[in-house]
View 1 (cartoon, rainbow, N blue to C red):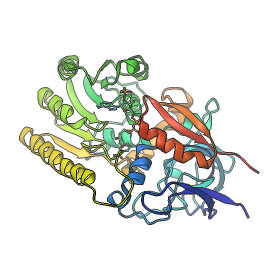
View 2: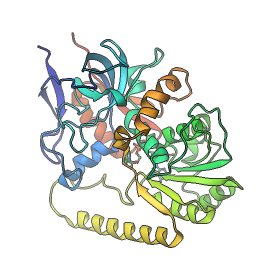
View 3: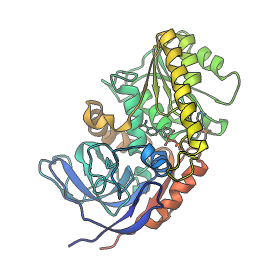
Length: 376
Ligand SMILES: NC(=O)c1ccc[n+]([C@@H]2O[C@H](COP(=O)([O-])OP(=O)(O)OC[C@H]3O[C@@H](n4cnc5c(N)ncnc54)[C@H](OP(=O)(O)O)[C@@H]3O)[C@@H](O)[C@H]2O)c1
């Protein structure tokens, strides 16, 4: 009998609480991973800050956490690509509708994941390196390649093709953005990104051709000029507040598709209780107003802007193309970097709450990671 422990969220808005959890069972096509490192995502902070206003289908108590890396200890029937003992990283889908909100949550020692959303950790990388990728990479892939998003061509993802077409990535230094830059380059597109000046060199290293400061008043003109005569195949608006400038760029360049990773207002800073406070009412009013004006602008300009859902690739052709087709060789050969770099907060499930709180305080081009002790 193997003991398992999780960092639970027992009720909406609650602090994470560390206590035993059931040892998970690998059904067909699933794996059990003994987790060595987890990363935290804005999603974890947003769910904790907004209770049933977000992910209303979530039943409490639940285990959050999407990004895991560690060693496979059990495989379910039909698993072909992996065996016990393999070191892997994976997207834990537990927060999604219809999933098991306990055994598939990443903030625990043993988690069950889908084989189709798992890739091997190459020999040179640590579990902390690998834990930075899963949700950010999946969201980047969803925004770039899903048919109802930018629908870019991912027939080749090895950088061998070059196209005279541009992808604009607004928020290139976000975790999603750094992966979007790399995926768009691998698919052969010219990439123009925005980020703070301190991150420009890093984004060029990852494949961006031009990078501009999103705070610069001339940034929209600079992005349009850099696109030059190339067709703008798509625009990815990643950070909160990115939609407006991205719609303007689409209107100026003739781009017809914008993928939206974030709502137009921030859900980070809400008081952690269920009251319909003045602050929350104001937030929802802004959300409705900004969404409405966004859609009017898009309709007027014949621009298609859609919200991205990172987990959508788990049930579409994009998931296998990325997780099985692209990632294993791309990370092993160093063509896809584990980015952003991990900042390890410390060891132990009890530090995950601190990591979520630190994420709320803000990060720049880094992913907050917690390692878990390995007891045998
Ligand atoms: N829809 C989905 O399925 C999905 C999935 C994952 C994430 N998201 C959302 O996508 C966003 C990014 O998530 P993440 O985990 O990638 O974030 P993150 O790594 O925490 O993002 C931090 C970065 O945001 C950048 N940033 C902040 N404000 C910006 C602005 N106005 N314009 C451009 N960049 C800005 C900063 O860049 P500089 O340091 O260069 O200033 C910073 O490095 C979040 O809002 C998150 O909730 C959505």
